[in-house]
Length: 245
Length: 268
Image (cartoon, rainbow over all chains, first blue to last red; front, side, top):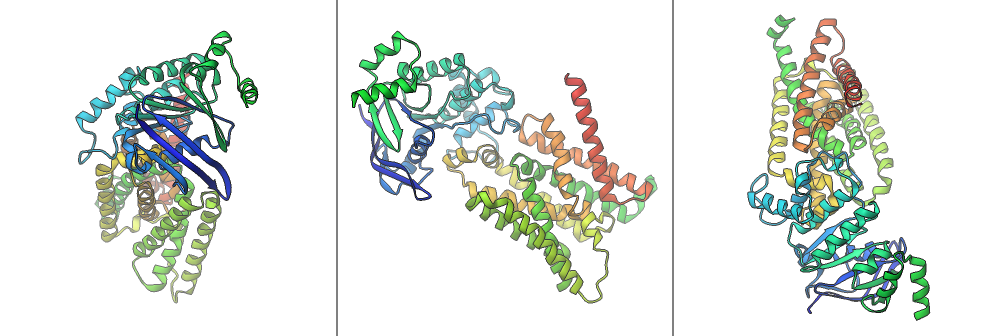
């Protein structure tokens, strides 16, 4: 399978503090990659570098063989914190339509194809009934689905999610991951998360980032363990990880 | 009271009130959803420096105030985009320095003893024909921009990081919102004065926000509420011979309390 993201010797500093150090990572088509690590470990920073929000100064990032800024339309992004700005007077469909911006747009308003495409994206995440509801009236899980629909709106080949389940109850989390698994049949998924127990079940590779990056292969050995006991927390993960070292 | 409508200055006041109400409804909505109320306050008070300059140099008041307000908007835009963490300090600084410059320049103007209170609390009954053109022109520009760039402005206001990812020039639209706010503040100063302008930009907007599902609905409702409050406020000020700006704001505030009380009563 072809490589969609290639990161070589990437380092990144912010206010003279080193956030990321010598990161090497390859993501292939239809991978389901999970990124874990402590808060402030650089997970979100890495995503923002991949998305071209922060400039790359040391090392290289190539998405589809080019610099990140060139292929933004091929990458869908669902940001962290969907609970901010819930008073904002905006309908679900309008949030999803934002996914289109930058592509062929009419003189004013939204084109019919755009609205239909946005409705399709909402249907994909099972939220089409809520199209005309104010975003603030949804639950955290529903809002997260809308954010995924917005990311899907541009028909991305890679979907990147930053902590998609941080503010959602257990049932909602499972639903989100089932949805991602389904989407994974035809697009690459990268997800930053703390929910190790869930990650182990769905991701086919896991990387741990705390300034430096460490790989885990979850497709083989770790899988059995996660089935035996449903909960598998980060501490145990870490211990196992040290043993392997 | 209706015979008052035959006076040209009352007609001008009414037209000015409606034009400014619609402009402040639209721009006030943007200010509120972008959480820029304090910024708008800073711009309003900095504009007083421009009023002082215009008086000192003998220029039209709107011109001086607009130049200062737009400059303040651009400075605030640069500061917020570069040093977000120090923003409140800088705005507080501009707020006070703008006022001080205005007061000093008016003091230095020989023979000038016009009522400078009118800029603090509004002088809608002194609106001239050219003031009306300025207000109408600004409203036309605002409606034009909101019609053609609505989705970009919506995206920048709702989720600027995502808007940036979709290739929208966030800095440009953020600055545009601030500049339009500055110009709206300048025309609103004529109606309710620079001290009360914040109330005009927030009270009708707050009520509208509760009743709207979309940003454009919020803008339209804000404009309508603001117009109603302005007309009632003007009528009361004419009838009882009290200051028009304060009268408009108090009508708005009382309406807000009634709305909140009614809202609580019906929802529970």
